[in-house]
Length: 315
Image (cartoon, rainbow, N blue to C red; front, side, top):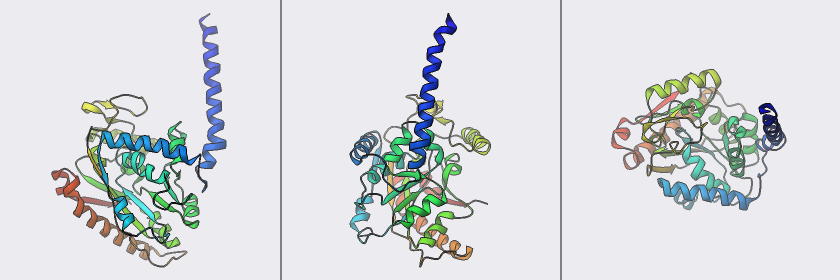
C-alpha cells in the first residue's frame, strides 16, 4: 500500500522533469545563444521593475548611469563592451539593477542592442533562466559574444567569473582577469570601446570568512560551480540551494554602481598581437584604478577603501 501511494508522486515528478528537460533543450538553450529578444517586452519591464523596486527598498542604492548617458556617450549609436566588477557573492548589482535598464533597452532605445554574457550554468535554474533571458542575458562563450558584437550590440560581461565569485572578500576589493584576456581581444577585433563599471558595496552585501572561501574554492576546482555556501543573516551559514529567509544581503547596505567613461581600443584588428592586447588591458586597468580611487572613499567602508583595489592577472 505505501508503495502504491508513492507511484503517482513519482510519475508526476518524472513528468515535470521531462517537461523541464524539453523546455530547456528546445526553448531555453536556443534562446541563450540567440541575438533575438526573448519574450514580450512588457513582461520583461514588469518583472525587472519589481526586482529593481525591491532592491531599491532593501538596499541603499544609487548609480550614475543616467548622468553618463546625458554626457552623450550613447548618442551616436556606438556599441560597447561593458565590464562590470566585482562579481561579488551573487552579482546582486547586475541581477536587480543593471538587468532593469537592459530589459527596458535603456539607453540604446533599440531592440536586440544590449545583452549581458553570463555563465551557462544559470540557464539551468528554473525561473531564474527565464528572468535572465527576458533581461537579454546570453550564454558566455566566444561565438555568441562575437555574434552580438557583429550586429552592433553592447555586451556586458564580468571578466572575473566564477573564479572571482568564490574569492569574494568583504574586507578586500580584489579583481581577477583571465590570462588570455579574451574580452579585450574581442573588443579589439570589433573595434569596440570598453566601459569599466564598478559596483561599490557588492562585496559587502554578504558576510565572508576564510573557511567559507576555502569550501567554495574547493567545490569550484572540483565541480566548476560558484558559491555553494555563504554566511547569511546574523552570520549563519546557508546555501543558495535551499530557500531560506537567512539567505539575504545585509539590510540597507550601501550599493553604488559607477559607470566610467569609455576606454578606446583603437582600430579593429582581426588577429591582434598579445602585445596590443596587453597594451589595451593596461590602459583599461589604469582607467579602472582611477575611477576606484575617486569613488571608493564615498561608497566603501573606510578600512576597505584605504586598502585599495588589488588586480590579479591569472596564470
